[in-house]
Length: 253
Ligand code: HEC
Ligand code: HEC
Ligand code: HEC
Ligand code: HEC
Ligand code: HEC
Ligand code: HEC
Image (cartoon, rainbow, N blue to C red; front, side):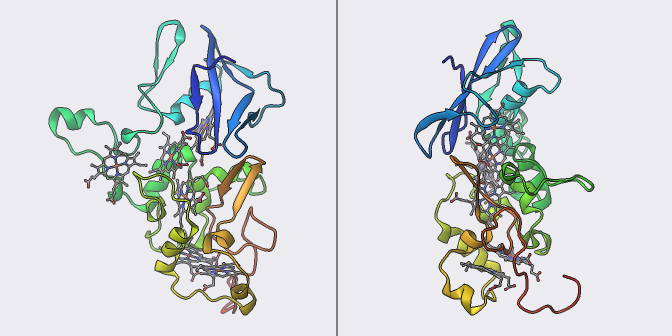
């Protein structure tokens, strides 16, 4: 199998892409999955033979892979070879171009000064933005749960905390993804010191994020935390809808 590029850092999966000729790229039909350590069908593919894309198709399918998985404006080299300035998500993705900074000492962007809504937009360039008014999201489609800014923006935590909840409240920008549920529980506790749970809920085992940001598995090998923080009914992980309030104080919800 020919591979000029490997997409994905390998936390969950790696998909291989190769240039075929001046006009075409191929996305290989088998991807490597961390969950099983094996090569299995690439998401969206029906057979292992790979999918051929025209480099300049109307959807720009292959160019778009590179746009989200690299840093800086794409260049085209000899034979319409796609040449990203830097592979992967690098400093300039969040801090903006460093050239002006190096040449004239202009300040680089400090994302910590952005509002929570602006951070959603920045990260949403690749992780998908919150829905614009009027946009329809299929909340029943497990593949959409990968779109963290979109889902987070639906949470009461996000909407009602006066801009205090952003991606960076839970994710340190320069560190590996935290995997310990307890670390996230501490963040929840900073706003919810004493959550009101029924006795039965308290008695059952689990972590804050295990119950309120449940794992969604769009296929057997991939898993995403549902960033729509809420109360989920038994067995439901796609959209909150469990018991919302112990006491209904007014007729609004
Ligand atoms: C240019 C596109 C792009 C932008 C903008 C972007 N990301 Fe990502 N991010 C990615 C890709 C692609 C991955 C998957 C990494 C990989 O597998 O190569 C990723 C992975 C991650 C991960 C998981 C890392 C892991 O170890 O699994 C986190 C957390 C994350 N991004 C947070 C953010 C936040 C927060 C922002 C906004 C400040 C942001 N990203 C902006 C493309 C982007
Ligand atoms: C709109 C931006 C965007 C486009 C277009 C895009 N990706 Fe990604 N991709 C991401 C982000 C963001 C992640 C990180 C997902 C996460 O962990 O939440 C990711 C993750 C991945 C992963 C790791 C497995 C996973 O699902 O987390 C692979 C492999 C991958 N992408 C391959 C591709 C390929 C191949 C293409 C083109 C056919 C492509 N991507 C197009 C943004 C994009
Ligand atoms: C996912 C987005 C993201 C990426 C990628 C990223 N940073 Fe940052 N960086 C941030 C955020 C957010 C802050 C502010 C952190 C804070 O104040 O707690 C920051 C702060 C900094 C600071 C301190 C700036 C100041 O004025 O206090 C430096 C220096 C820095 N980053 C350098 C880098 C370098 C070098 C890279 C690449 C190796 C990089 N960053 C990649 C998001 C990012
Ligand atoms: C920055 C503060 C903040 C953080 C951090 C935060 N929340 Fe919230 N959360 C809120 C606010 C504000 C509300 C809305 C309360 C209300 O409606 O009166 C809320 C509502 C909720 C609700 C009720 C949801 C609903 O739809 O009514 C749950 C469940 C919840 N949070 C769980 C969590 C969990 C679990 C975490 C950690 C993963 C967390 N929150 C982190 C501020 C926060
Ligand atoms: C209230 C805490 C919280 C906030 C806010 C938050 N995340 Fe997460 N995030 C988590 C948890 C918990 C996980 C699951 C970690 C694990 O796999 O153990 C996670 C995982 C991720 C991953 C890995 C793939 C996945 O979905 O499991 C990415 C990428 C990510 N977050 C991006 C973002 C982005 C972008 C934002 C802002 C829009 C954001 N997160 C805001 C708690 C949060
Ligand atoms: C076993 C699953 C489970 C665990 C673990 C759990 N919750 Fe809950 N949570 C629920 C359910 C279910 C409700 C709805 C009320 C009820 O039925 O107890 C709820 C309600 C809430 C509410 C809304 C009620 C209120 O106080 O406004 C918040 C906030 C909340 N939880 C936060 C948390 C935090 C923070 C943690 C971690 C310390 C946590 N939960 C751990 C299942 C859980």
